[in-house]
Length: 349
Image 1 (cartoon, rainbow, N blue to C red):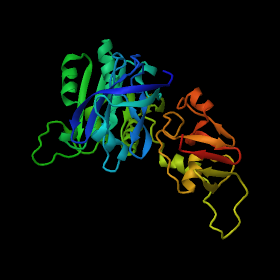
Image 2: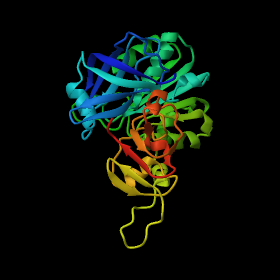
Image 3: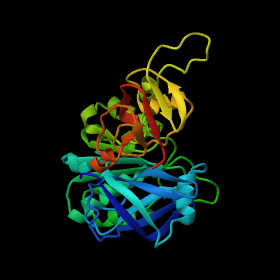
Image 4: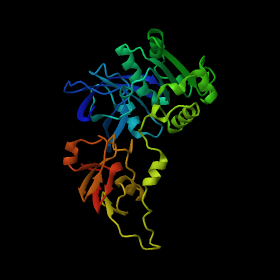
């Protein structure tokens, strides 16, 4: 689905756990919110001191396009998600764009799937599972979810109902720990190869979709590989590029005056001048100068790092995270825009 600009109205909210809320949205113009299971939306959150662009995976099924649901965890230090939990109520309208992302079961036909998630990585898996259930698909699915503790387990009642009602579906749950006063009858501990062999003994023969913290996805990937799985059949959510990829893109540090800095383009970011080298991305140059730009996928897909170019020339290679209209208005994505000379950008409009 190609991304588009839209204005959404919050039409409902549901408390899932102590730090997770599901928000329901409708298009204010009444247009259907078409998307693929596993795709995401980027919201322009009107915080008191800024517009914060944040990307969230859609948890609801594409078979019900009148509304979309985003299930959002408020991180302890996440001011944008905290604002959502505290201020986003029915009636509030926000700008958005999307859908974005290629992480979707709709792109891959297979007779059997494993949908594996950790923590809030369950949201794209719920969209996929709800989509399969609504369509009456008969494919073999194992839905494996890992949470920190029983109290953090999301969608427990709905998953139990789907497990009872849906043929060829098996729900497997595991928690890292069971605090005093909480009961649990499922698996517990950290998932390793031995535990996985008990939970999903035929993992390597399944089409696997995995989403969660980077360490979690890497661990599941190693288990899949050790079991003989082929890399082409293991898919992970792409939001949040690995640190190694960020380091490879980083420019040389800004000169401290001890030796002459190599001649190269200068990035002027909201008035601050940052010397760099040709071919560096705007994002990497900004980081080298100590400027933090909110980012999501770092692949030109989610649109979180959008800034406005005032002067200069860049080479931008994106994956749908920016519209043609935004490009005409001068906007670029910092993560995938490489400097071809001196460039001036701003976070303002």
